[in-house]
Image 1 (cartoon, helix red, strand yellow):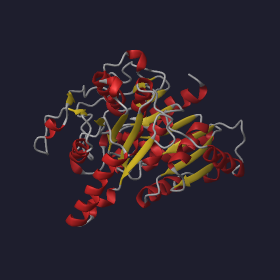
Image 2 (image 1 turned 180 degrees about the horizontal axis):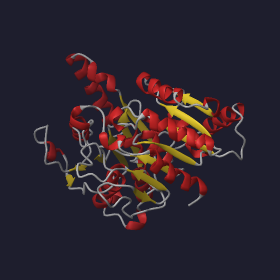
Image 3 (image 1 turned 135 degrees about the vertical axis):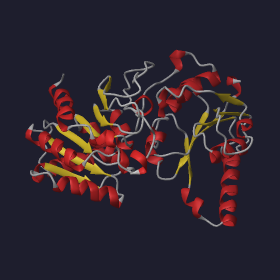
Length: 375
């Protein structure tokens, strides 16, 4: 099968962090098929997670606004989109890493003779499993990066030497230059130690208390490092980040870029930083590609979603179901309660997670301080 493959389509219709964690798949495919045309199909708004990836020839974007159109307009747009895949890509292989109904239909309609996806026991679309020519039962206890690569390795019978385990995000020089200029304007010298703090998530049940975040920022300032605080442009996230900063006494020592950075800009900030501190979020995954991370986890499992260390290769990064765990240069903070990970949007639907609120600033600061001191 491998010698006949000229075009490969990889589908991941999820959020930014999910898309970024597929980057090792493309590097692995390029190693295995150096002459094939490799295309990524992703949701609008997630393009910068993969743009500039050296192993990707083309990025197709599914406009998520289509979901809000009338039935006729939605059907027309989706049909045109499916036709464009066949005409523009004409894939020999379509790989669905999404496990959703829309991605399954796209996989089928792509015209690819080889259609691979994850076997699902919970089907919302009748006959979904029969869409694929190759279905794989993946180990849900493994990290998402490993699960993605397992599917690719088994589909093509790849050797271990072919697998590339590195999560990469391309940072344009102009983004590095812009951040360097911004730091200089704010009095940050080339020798100053910088810590990137991203305290928010699109889901507030993944967030720590504002008071605890503010206290850690104050500790960082007292320790003599420069702190850069970021958030997404979302109004609720920006307001929360600004509230956290309002609790910090030494505001003049903080560079606030809340709501004012691009995805590539976030990557440039974390790359320049000695440490990233934040919650389970896409910026955490972005930072982990280049920088030591201390991340707080609540309802989700670090064994699936913990910060990925590019130097860990095939080793399982987080072996326990919960608790404080270290993987190479990264640390995932989590309580060891029996209910964790619950995967719920807060305790009893409250949008607030007690397991996060229970984490103390003293224990978090102890780890952060140790990393800054190099132990």
